[in-house]
Every structure is written in structure tokens, then in C-alpha cells.
Length: 481
Image 1 (cartoon, rainbow, N blue to C red):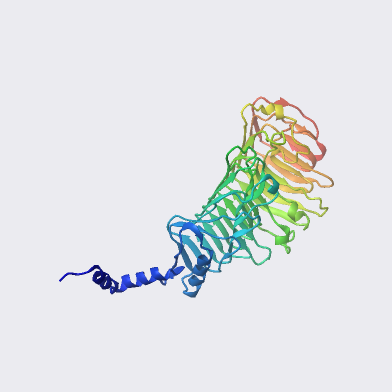
Image 2 (image 1 turned 135 degrees about the vertical axis):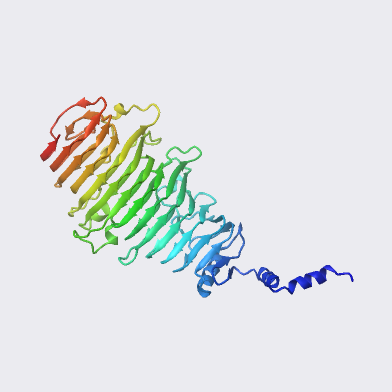
């Protein structure tokens, strides 16, 4: 008996599994749950807006109690300010899934994130610039992932292609949020396409605790743009965070930590957090690790228990294309720029076992820069503490420093006085001045002003320096050996 194709088709459809698959394909449901995870089922060619399908997949993951949304291989076009990953849901890709937006509005949030969320192995990008033109230079673009008032969030093994946006922003403005924020093993490429610096932090975290670890962040020069650096690789406002083994290349600031006063309104001088910044590699940056004190100066708070240990910092001196001067540089700095008169301090801080070195743009003579810097040049020194407030109980030890301008720039201004500073067992290579001890200028190994209690010993200095000794301004209890 002859068998027609229609008869074969009808017979195949009677097989239960295949019949189920055919029904699912016909239904074109945005998500399919199997009891273990929910698979996103929507257009993955990037041709159509799939925002609603992703929202439906999130809802299905909660309804079916799988709490996991799987993104198959493909490209997914989404609209900003629409999608929130609900509490307890994990996003994961087992293929090469890319989420992108074509929107150009400034300050939009692409995806919002709630507590107990994991995002793993996904890629995020934009199809074009986020309205990045010189006229929008003061804006910060769109935020790709926005974590707000959330605890227990993990963003791991993801890739971000950013062009004028913050890749990951964590903002916790209430005391009971921001715990256990983990950002690990992500790759972030920031592509500059206009000829100016841009005020953006690629990872920006307000958090009480957690870790920022093993991330690779790069600010990439494209086309004919010369002023191509993003503002900051990692900006973190936390008293209790591990920042470890990250690589930041080509940003103005490698790591910019601070303790944000408005986030911790109940903290006082007795607070004992622990901020660990260790084993990071910062390459071709203007400022390596700059602890910024201005936000908490208005709170009369103390930044304390900060450990900056075993970091490699490569500072690059080069000419700015627009303003015509060379970048000021600091390897590691404790600094503030607030006009507040509140009592604010840096206390109990260790700067230990770091490598700080400087490379130069071709043809740039470092000795020609000896007394040069843009006024008032507050950030200039391998280790810089030029502040309006007091630095107390600071240990600077066992660092390798190759820096031509002031190695240790220690200047308190106004009525502030730096106290109990210890500098020992550091190895200095090719400093411009040997044992200088000045009250102004930018060319001393020790630049001192308003110091009460400095011990410097066993610091080895190599090269062909100039010998000079001159008393600093308003200094007492000074011992340099």
C-alpha cells in the first residue's frame, strides 16, 4: 500500500513528545518552563523589540517557581527603563546571548536589578553611541545594569561593551541595603569616540559589603579621538569591601574609593569597617588609587581602616590634546576637595608593598616637568596626601616607586595638621631630588607642610638625584633618616 506524506505527518504527530514540541512552536510562547528553569522563547535575531517577552519570562520564572531565566544563543533588542529582574531570579546564558538597546537618551537605565539576583554569562552592548557628543559631555550616558536598594546580588562572567555609559551601577541609599554585592570576572570595554574626557565610572558601587574581584576594564581609543580616557574604572563608596585582582587600563582614575556620607548617616568616629584594595593592576592611568574624602567631610566622619596593599600602578604622562598641559599624576592618594569646615580625618591607613611606576609619552623629558603642573595641581605625587583635613596614623612601607616628581607629598592646609605619619622601607628609583624636604614646589622626595609627627627611615634611593635640604612649612617632630 502506498503511504502519502500526509499520512506520515499525521503518524509523527501522534508521538507524544514531538506533538508537544509542535504545539509549543505554534504557540510561540515567550517562555517555556520545565520545572528546573525557564527558557526565553522569542526572536533572537535582534530584528524585533523583545522587551515584553523578557518581562513575561521573568514572570513565568516566578509563577512556575524555577527562578531562573535561560537566554539561548542570539541577539535580543530591548528598550531601557522597562525591564526589572525580580527578587530571587537568576539570568543566565548557556550560549552567546547578547542584549542590546538602540536608545540614545541620557540617564536611562537599561535593566534594573532587585535583591537576591544573579546575572551570569551574558553580554550587554549598544548598537550606537549613547548621544555622546561634545554638547552632552557633562552627562553620564545610560546605565546598563542598575542595582538599587538591594542585597545579595552577583554579577559574574558578563561582558559589557559601553560607549558613554556606566556598565554596572549599584546605588543603595538606605542603611539596610547594599550587603553582599559581588561583581566578579566581568569584562568591560569602554570605547571613546569623541575628543574629550568623559565623566563616567564603568563600575560604580554604593554598598555596605561585598567584593569587586577579577574584573577586566579597558578604556579604548577609537577613530581620531585623542582625549579618550573614561573618568574612572572602579568607583566604590563602601567602608567594608574587597577590591581585588582587577585590571584597569587607560582610565583617568584606576580605582576611586570613598565612604559616602549620605549612605552611612549613623556612622561615627568609632566605626570599624575594613576596605581592602589589593593585588590590582592599573595600567596607563592618570591617577592610580585615589581615596576621595569630600563626600564624607560634610558628615564629620572618619575614613579609617583602609588597606592598599600589593597593587601595581603604571602612571602615564602625556599631553592633553585640548588644554595643552600634561596630566597631573598620583600613584596613591588620600585627598579631599570639600569646602566644609567639619572635622574630617583619614585614620589608620596602610599603603604597603605597592609598585608605582611612570612611563612617558614619546619625546617627553620628565626632568622638564620638574616644577610644572596645572595650578593648583593638588594631585601630584607617588603617594599624595595634600588635603584640607588631617591624615593620622598612616603607614607607608615596602613600596617600590619610580616617580620623578614628589615621592611623598604630605601637605595639610588651613588649620589641619597631619599627625603620626610613618614612611619606611620604601625603594625609590630615579627621583628628581634626593632627601629634599620642601614647603612648596613639586620637586621633593618629601614635600611637607603642616606636619606634627613624621618618621621616615630606611628608604633606599637610587639614581642620580640632586641633594637639597630645606625645612618644610609649619612642621614639628620630624625625623628623616
